[in-house]
Image (cartoon, rainbow, N blue to C red; front, side, top):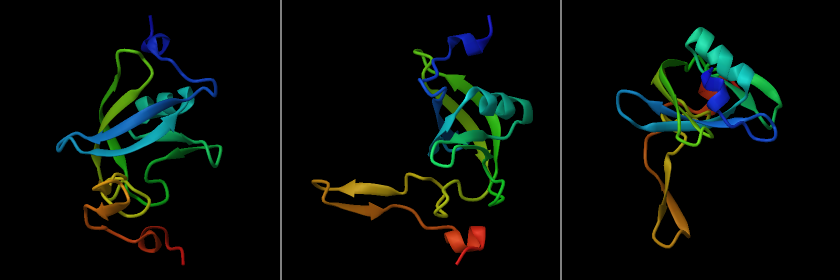
Length: 129
């Protein structure tokens, strides 16, 4: 039996993937994968995802150069979430932060604070103005 038989893709053929930096344990991002992006990730050792908003396949770092090399790929007990441990080069967040989870809620939730330094601006990463 293939491990794919243990996975539960949703009605759109997607499964959430949590990406974690292997060395530090820091959660870097969450993205969606379909079977094709999962297969390409396993084949190449680089993370590939499915963009729900753009409705297209993409490789992490294809435009920014901030790549993720897969070190381990696991799935949870229910088979409905993936955990991908990676070696991250550069920022994992398209906003230029190491992690997409760079904001923490303060107090009652009316405010938040930025909890890490921005490594690069989106303009520096993508050359957009």
